[in-house]
Length: 545
Image (cartoon, rainbow, N blue to C red; front, top):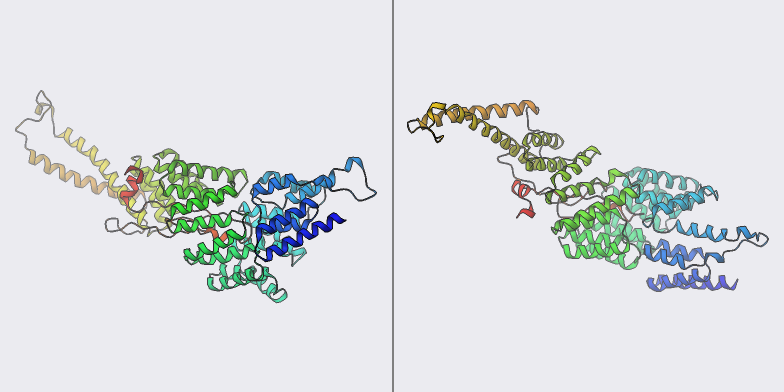
């Protein structure tokens, strides 16, 4: 009993340190409480929910705890069952740790607790499973589990951050409104209430209102991580990168065990074109967590823009491998595969690049920029006819896309030129009968050169007209409604944001999928690299300079 009192004192000491924002001291106090009594679950909860330990630190600390000290109640001293209580507590703790560390082992613990110990419907086990699904971008499945938790206990506040984040990702604004309204009426003193209100306003595009309520939630509980991340997201959503950097820096100082603030700091510095700082922050996040596909993808994007293409390829491939290994939603990582295709293209690995773009298109990434990138490769391989066909598909998606329009004009010109080469050879053969050649294979001096040139030009004009008519008939009679190529300028694909975490990076900025991560467990965003805007940069590439 004295041991439990001593652990309780350490836990209370940690709470006092946390109120003073002395989080390092609070972490040590919570650790002391668990070392004294491994069953001090309150101290364990504070360590985990406030992200005070990195995944590696969590693993090391769990190995140092004495779970064998957990005993059966008096009267149940069965020698064969002596170790089971400690194993049970150990598995329960493992389900609360980082979901990035080893998802397959975590799934094993969840299955054992669900089947062997009959905890299939336990709220903590369901929440652990939902958090894991959320990190894998399986938002509908995660939302179904959190909804089941809230159906049994409508005010289970630990489940709300993940549930609200899933609703945000699925753009279920009506449900967000109902939850926020109910919590504001019944629990106005809970920071989760104002987190819900802030997420609703963020989902509906009312950024200023969202910022106000995120700020209110963080003021009510300075250790409430989702509120701090949401507050910073509001600045990022408005393009206020400097203020976003300040807000994310505060979150990084408060929550030293999570890689998310460092990741978002890297994204913001990337948006500011400060590649050195972006790389430094992303490397810091990488030291904390090496198994987040979004982080690996962002590292690859930074390397790509620094022309370190071999390193970019390594990070993109690692991001795809990790996503596949964790059973993540494959459509969530089309951006990483698109980025890998661009990196292959710039390394002149055209066949591999074409294969990656075909994979993206086959798996549902019907994007005009992907079609344009594929056509660019076909042009570089000397296949203008196939490139023209692909570009017509691009213009069917976005008829006003200037890049696709310009490339289509180039493809038609190259196709016509290829036909003219054959025409010139044919005309020369026809205009050089055997008796007009000397022994050296040259034309006799008396041949009329002007007459030959005039006949050649007439034939040339006819063949050009026939070639254009043939292309118009073959590909639908139009160029997708785009502007004519000769006067069109290339698009500057400046803005940086990806859709739904699976969106498109169209410029130097990093992805805005950060608005999808950090409100609960952490979603993936998927930025895509831009095709170069002008034809000259498209064909030559920066690595050919």
